[in-house]
Length: 159
Image (tube, rainbow, N blue to C red; front, top):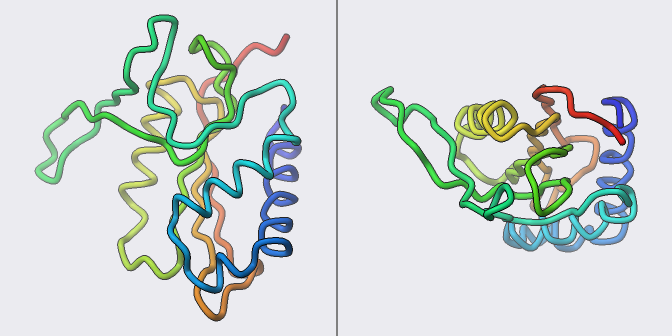
């Protein structure tokens, strides 16, 4: 699936999320609940793939998902990761289509760590695409205020 189709599918799911489940956004419900609902909406858009939340395994032996990233002192360290949402073929590490990290607008923490994590996930764990979403939440939640940032990984073979 090319980036344009992928972006269109995600935007459709976000529209459905804000239309159907706006109360979880305006009430500023927890990020995991929001990601769970978004993943459920994504499932029918990606029929050839599995859509999972906080899926922490990879490859045939189901090893934990570990990536190398610099710590706060710039030292490269191995970290266990639990991506918010992934779109992949489970059971192997060959066709990882999309990894998504979500942050609510009411979260004051910066986006830099999530961006670095997405870049590492794309290249170290072979996700073809990474997407950072800063969702508009709280009383003024508005789909028009959602921020998207895409990250590219290696091209995967399509069947």
